[in-house]
Image 1 (cartoon, rainbow, N blue to C red):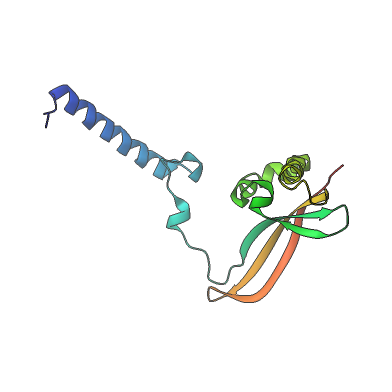
Image 2: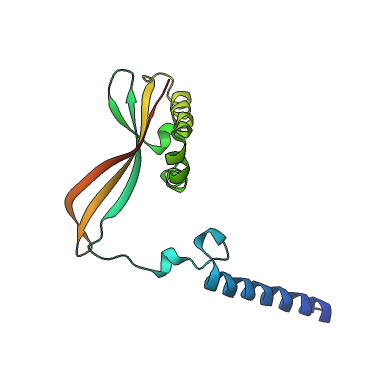
Length: 145
């Protein structure tokens, strides 16, 4: 086993102190967007037990009029990717054209989509458990040409 030189020790101590400083600063002043040096608020906070849970999904309407849920495997896009882009999609619904294109490329034998919707489901909770009540709201609708 080799022994560290004094310069090697200083470099390791400096890197460790810099990492700790980064972690402290981003914990005090950062957001989750500062990953990997972030406060990780998602792990350090809780929601109210009776607050509804939001669940986002994509739905499509085929040219035949059938409404379908667009799964991750149908488009190659994960739900988290859509959730992370919600504000952009609301501002520019034309971004959903890419979802329809991805669906068509992955499912050439299925009917084409004439519409893609972003649907948010609110699932009601009581004492942290689902009550069975839920409400769906279409937040963005895009007609595909």
